[in-house]
Length: 288
Image 1 (cartoon, helix red, strand yellow):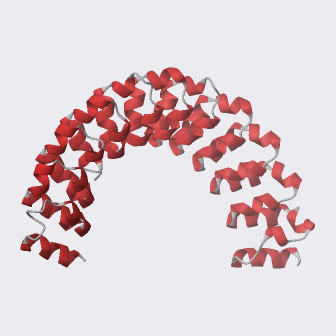
Image 2 (cartoon, one colour; image 1 turned 30 degrees about the vertical axis):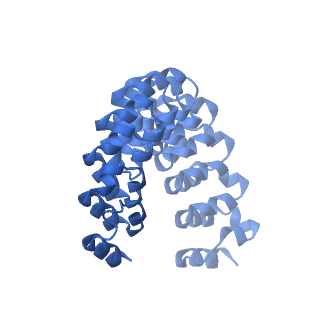
Image 3 (tube, one colour; image 1 turned 180 degrees about the horizontal axis):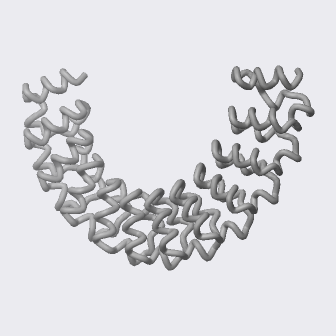
């Protein structure tokens, strides 16, 4: 295949640089056209062209991770790295060490992908502005933050508001902070199973968890398993949560109706006094 035919096939979207001969892989016009069409083509370019800034910029503007295949010198080029992380924050991992310590580059990376904090210089992992931007984008990014920032309430609140499950990375002291716990269960009710015992007896916290997760009663304080407001929220989310309800409420028709409406199999947990109730059986039959 000659150059003219290669350029024609690129326009048609029917060209693979990986399958082309070495002359075409070393032809700047062909490679540039191929990379504009498909950034993955850059991986197959001739070594010399992987050091060509124009071609590298074209590739990383489409896929930031294309910088992985760039010449080492360009991995240390601020303009190239900035374009890469704008497109894909994780591309920070391929940058030269000094640029991983560049706050502007790191901020750009974590705004695009919070997890890019993993590749930042140690000093920037302790920079509150950088870490806040990271956790606002991805709560799990707090895993890579400096220990002192895992003890910072503002950072931890931002973290659990984005991803309640990231609560596990918070400092032990903040795991007993009611505001933090409430924010975490509001984002993800499943966190209730991991909180301090005193919060499992806190009605607002358990009710908040119940509104978006159907299994809080399994972990809630016994007293709250008899709270009708909480129980109704829970069984509306998950009928089988009726298993953990106080015996008295298993005989409450409103509660039972809500449970079997959500999941007919909850009938097995219903008090004997209601197991043959026609209204309840009708709903179970309808949901089969």
